[in-house]
Length: 249
Length: 264
Image (cartoon, rainbow over all chains, first blue to last red; front, top):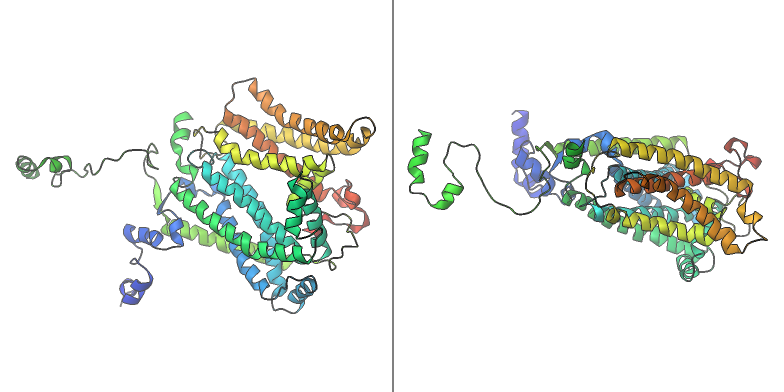
């Protein structure tokens, strides 16, 4: 049996067909169906312009942010198996992760560096979108989603910063939340609500933990889904909009 | 043969088949009329690829590359873990995470209400209203748009790099806050004056452009570039040049063995 006929037999079998709603993707129809019939892939367009794929156009910054987020979810879930968000135990579980959990130190390192990288890459992504004019009609709303995602990313990083419960964490969060407390009227109340008290303590650790592992990642997942979907609905990357560039220059 | 068939059929066929001919020798036909603007209207010839596998392959390569980079970096440098948190022992310097160090740097120069609340609020507001102010769809999808836009961005970046660094150094050497402590009320010395100076520095390049023919987009290019480069200047200053007591030092001359990179 030749290789192609074997592939054809597999991709036409009843089992394969129950998993995937399309045939072997060696023709335009099945290549479209790969993207449109899969819940995860359907956020992509079926076809993209050759120009929008040029590396020097987007530098892949949006995709890199999403990849870093995936790395953070993966390593973060692994860390959750050992970390305990209590003032008495947080620091000792950190030590435990680093000293006795297999690959614990390595997992934590990857989580830390991916987090810093994500903040940086998201900011670079915003700069790229701005300097390519990709916030202009019809993409204004997706720019707003992007601004929200930038703030969520900062929030996710900031709330994670407290969790090791070492001096670095404690004083960084104290300094950071003091800044928020200067806002008139709502400032002290907002700081009180975020910290769950007058200063950084057990309530703050639990609140930051909940924000860090549940609320912000869920918000980011939701907003990234809308963000990607809107990229497709608004006509793909702005590199497709060659009307202006070709007529004016 | 084909001609003969086509003409004989046209005599008997209903009008819809004339509009949507099925059996002509033509290789094209009018299929449907649609109203409105589609994503591809005015976009020129369709130069597209299937996302499968072109996009998917690139994403997989990026995924492997990014993961490998983080992987290798983690092998070289460990995440920091200092002594257990102690509310009674303040670290010196006490710094916020690096992305908030621009704000912490601003706190050294002005009232906390201005540095910590008003300026960040204005920045976020600027980002939110930006696409609704600059509504021209010209020049979307091209880096920096025109050659003139590129020049504007480059000069604005250079200007901002210079004036904001100068502001940090000069205000550190001759602190407005200290000079005016006795002579002026706090809201002038720490609010109005530094706020006014910053607003002037931001408005200056935009104002210089208004003398010539300038589009809204170019004003936005100036404002965004000032914001981005200022953020970089203040963040680098707060992260790399602030040592014990949050005083300015050369990064290689930090007293007490303090290494700014340990706080990442």
